[in-house]
Image (cartoon, rainbow, N blue to C red):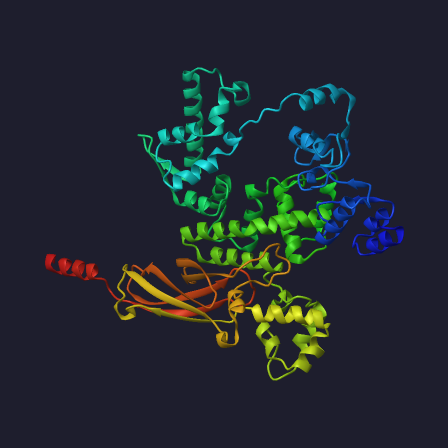
Length: 569
């Protein structure tokens, strides 16, 4: 048994002040923004019987594992900010909440009390007591399923698509509950017509969004946009939006707005009174919102929270959780944006999207000081580094490493724990040596393929590192990124004068990596000054660019044309 004194000691270990107060009264609560340590302590105290009451929001009913002799459901509605109305809990959630009543091996029965609006009582009783049919929702998500199967060649024609549907749970339920799926009848003719119409509509939408193409004979083949969407697991509506929005002049701000408009963010909740909080945040964002922005729109919320992430704005618990979801979902979307831009052969928009990737991982604007990405580096510390008058100015993360210990300590003035975080970041910061070679550079002719080999090598002393340390190479230090991430690098060859992207390859780097890039030489003979870019997807300030002088000779076909014209003359 835990006494009152012990409960008070346990309460002091909790981080949330409100939680500390109620725990002493035998009551606990959990919420989506609660830290893992507090969550584990509260749920353990409840399991041990120290807490008699555990309060839980409805959206966490599937996460909470605890059970009780009595469950009280206080209301059966939740506010839906997108619809601007109160919506009923899904009946499956209500049944799951009811199932929490009765503790295994302790209770022979359990009690559940549902407090609801009186007119809903009979309807709820019918829904809860009658068997709940399980229906398929595949018809709502068929576009992305079809697109993936078309890319993998599982579906190669309209008939293949129809056959694919016949192997699904959707097909089994169509005749069992025809009204639910808007089926006109249950005969084979009705079923066949319904499937054909559904498949034709879905494939038509995919063709319109340029994810696939269909022939008059009904054959289906994937297009570039469909392949990108399938590779990164993003929705076909998002890839269509990206392709129609990017232009040769798109800058970082434009890429950020395209990113926030992705369909993947449509599921972001808009809670009660959250519109007001978003309006207040929007007043102080770096880039003003578009005129058409609506604060009950999930995509507007994504744009505001992305900018708050880059500005490191303090947020409420719920908004911070939403921001984590947005940041985590952003990486594959940005990579898809880069691929779409590179397909169009635009250099500057691709580089802008790559910079946005760095911003998302480190939680900074691309115009911020590169030292700001180091943990615990405040404006005061950065100002002291800028004002430092040593042999070499402090301009990059590498300069922090080269300082003498006493000088570094005087500039940073951090505790030992924080200095450890600084050391970990600086040691993980990539110091990469880049070498490249254009193969047969003396024999490049107009319009012919050019092959270029690029080698990236991390500057480390492998002899002083054990296997575990080597395996951790490439793990990104990013305190504001919600998941573990490994470094990725974009190798880009482009012509800055014409804004042309000639070749792009994305690679991962542990110690050494070699990439082969191929592109077509310019159509006209002459001397060209191309540029090689090595762009990190995770860190600011470590990108590298090199000039590639390229002499293009006249092609053989040109000589032949000249000879023919002379003979004609």
